[in-house]
Image (cartoon, rainbow, N blue to C red; front, side):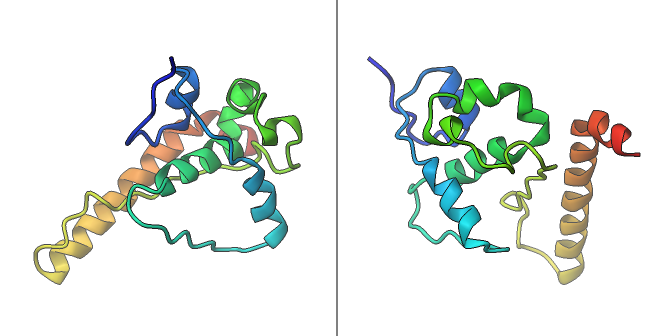
Length: 134
């Protein structure tokens, strides 16, 4: 019997550990056809927003190209992928750990530190791909 990935927003882990997954990847095609530059996903808590963003990250991430068949092969989007799959550098911006407490200067410093950290992590993660471009 497969487990339910309650609270798990890591698509790779869900696929790798054979959790139950209801395929909604056909919506990737729908999103691309809509040509929205900044989609906004408004849903209640625990409705899969983080998992959906993680799926999109895995789908578009150039560094995950070698894992495409494993992650998406048997899913709808894997059987008929769009031309944009695994073509982009994807940087995940997570501001959930920044405390809004303190002065404006404190918050600005926390924001700058967080942004710098995320950029450093992204540069290291994509270092092989960035060297090819340069």
